[in-house]
Image (tube, rainbow over all chains, first blue to last red; front, side, top):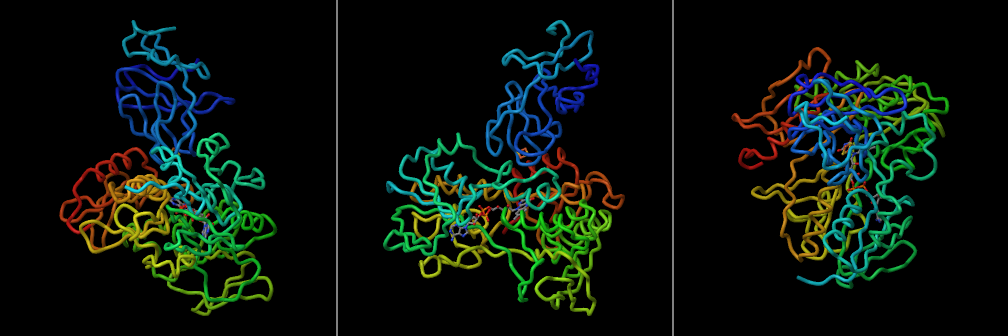
Length: 120
Length: 400
Ligand SMILES: Cc1cc2nc3c(=O)[nH]c(=O)nc-3n(C[C@H](O)[C@H](O)[C@H](O)COP(=O)(O)OP(=O)(O)OC[C@H]3O[C@@H](n4cnc5c(N)ncnc54)[C@H](O)[C@@H]3O)c2cc1C
Ligand code: FES
């Protein structure tokens, strides 16, 4: 479990990049559509950083060749990306946002900004 | 609308593959043949001047990580791949493509996707002088740079030349870039921004010599130096010539198709024949609302034109024009350059973020009469993308 930041420091529409320690890749954390999401930061197509991508609803557009990824599943919805990026579970505890590298999110269960909706 | 039973894609690379993908995703279930001169399955070219040259892992034999398809997708595409065989002629009357070795393919739909090939200098061939377009070119260059090269001379400071120079500098080699124009990239970026990008060479430790051409090579058998038109001689172990490309249309001579620095087609990639389309670097498209034609040499155009051309080929006429805003990126000396739009000489430049003078990233917009025409970003991916989207939606000055 990696602390990201206090939830007020990641406003809606923003993203943040966190180092997930040695073995795991860099992770991009997003606050969009009223919820937090975490996916691998590196686009599955080439080497662009998805935390620098364009957020639209639950999708992020890669800043290099515009592949669109669904933040809930990590699946690309258009070319040139053809492979998914990994998703990672996020939790909010006492207003603090955490990511759990390598724990897959359950699609359809986003973690909302309101602390009482947090799942452990 | 005619019903096609065999479509042949000539050119097994980015644009041809995307046309094939487009055909299948639009429901074309007839015979699909892909003819490619190279022995490799489609692979991605942009990394060839970048990570491929600098990377330390052994690139292996085939495209490996650069492959644009995988076996699963190839199975889905259900195409016949004829690789390592160039097409030599197109006989539109007979509905035939003739391949090297004498074989003829009957076909009723054709996608021309033969791309472009490097221009060369009118000088004798010597060992140690390279051009860079294909995986095989890049493999040879990579090996040469790792052999015992110390001094590299790159001829031409366009995007490919600059990327190769940057990769050589990253490998710790002594690099000189020779550019005939007083300043590189002015037609693409305009003088002000071209000057900023030219500054990247010095920052990356390469020497840029502008305003001088190449007189000849030094050395017999193997290059040892480059003689410049201003009389200087640059010692060199490896020379890379990056002086632009020309579209590959030689095989279409005599086909009756209009060839004019590319295959002429309408705004939807369709040639004068509704069953022949052209995509990617080889295609010269009409620009609606103007008398001009455009041929793009950018990765994104190649990818997107494939899909548009597939739709129009299946429809039997242009039902969808290719309208995407031009976009390209380049990685040089650790900086990522992104450009979108259509600037014209005389457009003014306004800096929106950062300061080009301090060597960090910045975002610039080109304007004409208060209307944005293009965007240039260096290490500003997110705001660049916002601007690129705005440009794609905004009206363009008349006649663009
Ligand atoms: C080193 C390098 C770096 C690049 N970097 C960038 C970048 O950073 N950003 C960017 O936007 N663009 C970049 N580009 C440009 C981009 O790669 C091209 O725009 C793109 O490859 C065009 O695709 P295409 O399919 O039209 O042509 P190509 O990729 O050239 O493919 C054409 C294919 O047709 C084959 N062919 C030719 N003649 C015949 C024939 N008679 N019969 C059968 N097959 C034939 C060729 O062998 C080739 O495989 C780069 C290009 C190169 C070479
Ligand atoms: S690197 Fe993300 S789409 Fe190409």
